[in-house]
Length: 415
Image (tube, rainbow, N blue to C red):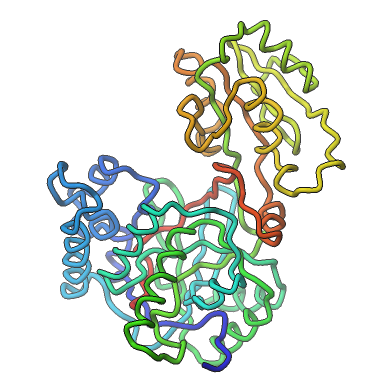
């Protein structure tokens, strides 16, 4: 195989413009089965009938039963045959803009090289779970398509911004506001000159970074390896050697905080716990909810009162970029030594609250008596994520909450 470009255009399947608002759906992993069924009820065109096809089967049937994947394929083909989904006549790139409140981000949808993923030019920061990886592998293989995009970022380049700025001056093919208030706009780039320019510019990037969608990327690489083995030889340009991604510049990506709530004080009274915390952090009561405005400051809600915690640790002594993250500082210097939360991935005494829910989500969990104490954090930065990925590290669990969320079913890559 010769040199393989980092990205390529592909002839995407897209909803009919008059049906896109019905088709486009939240990512498969942000809704449980009941929520997905409720959202899709009365809407036969929702892409949830493909991405979470278990909603069309008896609730007793496991989401990983073979019937689910076959129903997903049936629904996907039916959307094509009925003309709800139409395939572009030529390989294209797609520009995807999301607007949420005052925030706007504009990215490029393309088919990304699996080889770049396997050789770490597409960098990861998260371990994948075998069960979720198996699920996404089966859905991609059964559909013959990558139906949901991987969300990636890259160090921004003005030259790429300038080309995308030219594209978004044109008339979009989609422009709608979803029920959650997020605006989604899509432009098709089919002109060879634009495509060649963008492919060349992305080829100059040292790396892409997966922000969200590690399981989808891992599944695509497994499908690619299996199909290569079946064929015996390939050029590297076959559709199954690529996965669909949306790439946003790092200066437009927004990460919200991922806060923590803990069920009990590990046998301590509130007074003893506060005294122990004060041994490690500067502790100041606050009359207002504490939303940390800078790294290494934390909010704590205990006994109907907010406290501001400021880290006393000598951060210059921490060489490991993971240890310098706020989620690591809280875990290593408070949650584990004081509250005995040794493994937050599996300990059922801790739960995580995405920043999209605001501080009221923390207060409610404590005031209800369900939880004893809550902690608010400053968001992890994209720079921190990239630094960890460049070092070959793995981010701690529940470090990042990306917002706004991409929609499934806007563009689909056949493989």
